[in-house]
Image (cartoon, rainbow, N blue to C red; front, side, top):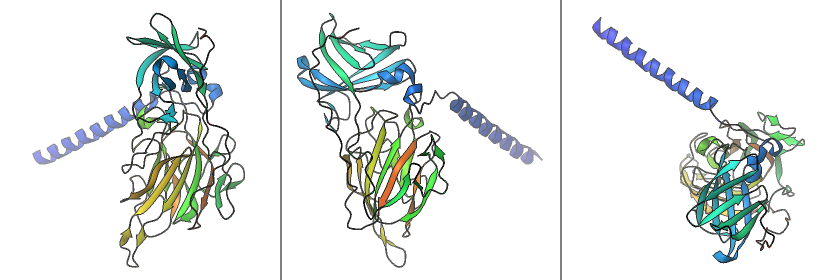
Length: 360
């Protein structure tokens, strides 16, 4: 009798512990911040965040800045010597970093350290000496992937096109024609190239894996992470990372609500007739037109979906609870194809010396 009572008491404690954990997780989910899928609804904070480019002569030339929303009232400012990631800035960590407070009434954010002050408005970022002298003005830029809108070449197959083609039988259509998360293609794939476009939401009060999280699972087995990791270092669990396996060469993640691209060349793992793996899968990835993985060997599958297999596999777009959207998805299974043909894009934004006074 005593043993039975102890057994049931322990089970009761275990059940209570699980219930407490579920309640905690529920409260965390309920406390998550606002999520925006439209710039028009995102307010002044969204106008402030983003990328800036210009010249600070006193600091030796070209500088970029990434302004990242970290709450509904604060932004983190990364000043980047040389330009922006993939276009002049070559480090993983910012050259200088500030935390700025947002004043919604005046539509600006301000910060300072021991040597300079920063003032950010929706279109400009001013860097000042502490005596008020302007050192330089950076202008907001909107970068666009060189493969954005790339057309499906002859001999390739469209998996999803807005209001035209949808091979994802379980795919939910949102916002009048975009593909939502949590769906699997009916097309099964071995060696192939893939073009896919995605957009992460704006979640200023969320962070880490709770911010624009999804994943592009090649063959349903190897995840190229999708995440709003704008302004982060670029790890294997951030945007462009091959989850648990490989870190991108550069963090090419654009600001939230920007349309971004992955162009992927994939070689499937090869197996003997008996089902024993002979060679590992390999992958090359371009994020927003920039090479971030070059013929990387994949020694294993990544967690979250299907195990490795000798059979062809479907493309899976992960549902991680955030409203990530996809469009313009196509594949080429021709073994002689190298990579999707980029669309013609305009010139890259170039830093220029802003000679106009910074007006507060």
